[in-house]
Image 1 (cartoon, rainbow, N blue to C red):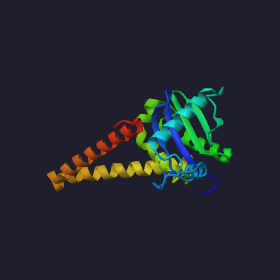
Image 2 (spheres, rainbow, N blue to C red; image 1 turned 60 degrees about the vertical axis):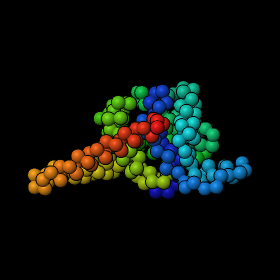
Image 3 (cartoon, rainbow, N blue to C red; image 1 turned 90 degrees about the vertical axis):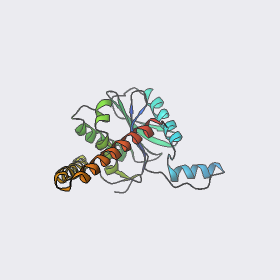
Image 4 (cartoon, rainbow, N blue to C red; image 1 turned 180 degrees about the vertical axis):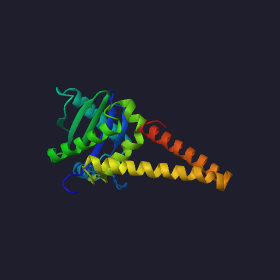
Length: 214
């Protein structure tokens, strides 16, 4: 799906802290730019590459958005070479960011897709607690809509169907492991416990990265 490359999506709480973010345009490390023109080009090609620059952008988004009148409506605004759409839903802030000059109508369509999927994932109650309770589905949503900043899908029904398919596949895999414990003995049970420990460690790592902790 051509026409727009997304620089970032951020779901933040009302204090500007991260709930879920994705910056698809992360480029491999290269030589440091030495001139303003090279810096501008590097920014355009690489997007918001590191944690510090991502958090700086998020703070700027929150500050600029807080000064707008219609925070409960979708607001479009420009910021440091980007165009952004933002909306406050209960205690959650949602931002979609693209390069300056991007098609705002297409950006709005992306925004509406994300809002519709989030509403379905949270049973119509978009909020900080609901987002955290459905964090796996939220990250799957971002992966289904974007890849390397390029649009993959804008149909909320298709995105939800794919999320449900992945959830079902994970559930079936877990069921198969449980069913095999009786026949396979202690080894299968040990493997299931190991997989659960890995999953828990992965979730803790993701939360640590999102919070900027060690």
